[in-house]
Length: 218
Ligand code: E4P
Image 1 (spheres, rainbow, N blue to C red):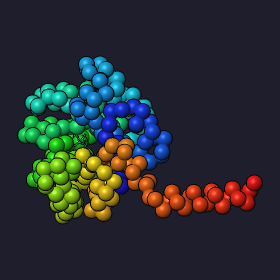
Image 2 (tube, protein in one colour; image 1 turned 90 degrees about the vertical axis):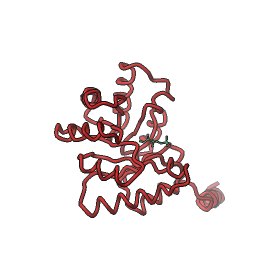
Image 3 (cartoon, rainbow, N blue to C red; image 1 turned 120 degrees about the vertical axis):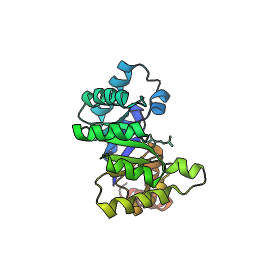
Image 4 (tube, rainbow, N blue to C red; image 1 turned 60 degrees about the vertical axis):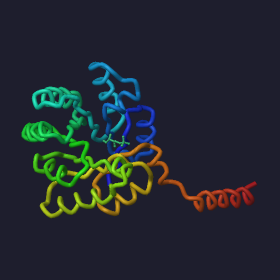
C-alpha cells in the first residue's frame, strides 16, 4: 500500500519523508489556502518545492471547471515537474479533460469521488488515480469504506489499472481498513500516519527493556 500525505505543509511533508515511508503528496486548493499560498507563481513554486522534498507523485489540482481551462492549467502544472499528477474533479468537463490528458501521457488524479459510478467513469477515461473521499462520507452517516470496497470489486472485474487512492482519511483505523480492502494508496494527515505507531504495550515493553539494560550496564 502506498502512503501519501494530504497536506501542503512543507514541514510535515519533510517529517513524513524523513520517516522513509512516504510515497507521495496530495494537495487541494483548501490545503494550499491553509498554508497561505496564493497567486499563480507562488502556487507553482510551492508545488516545485514539494516535489523537491518527496520522491513520489504530487497531486496538483486545477481550478477551472471548463475543458479548455482544465487542459491549459493541467498542461502548465504537468510541465512544472515530472512528479506532478494533475488533479481533476469528477464533472463532465473533468472526464473529457482526463481523457485528453490520458492520450497526451499526462497522469491524473480524479478527485471528489463519492460514488462507484463516478469511479467507473474516471477509470474509463484513463485516470491514473481515483480519489474516493472516505471521511467526508462518514461525516454524513454514509459508509465510506463500503465505497472503497465497491470500487475495488468493479476495478478488479474489468482489470482497470486506475489506482484507488483512499482520500479524506481521518484516523489510523481508516488506513488499516483500506489496507484490508485493498486500496492501492491512502492519503491522510501526518497525525493519522504516525498514530499507526502507537501501542501501550510497545511503550511498556520498551521502558522495561531500557530499565533492565540500565541495571546491568551501570
Ligand atoms: C484528497 O486528495 C483530498 O485532498 C483530501 O483527502 C480531502 O480530505 P478532507 O475531507 O479531510 O478535507
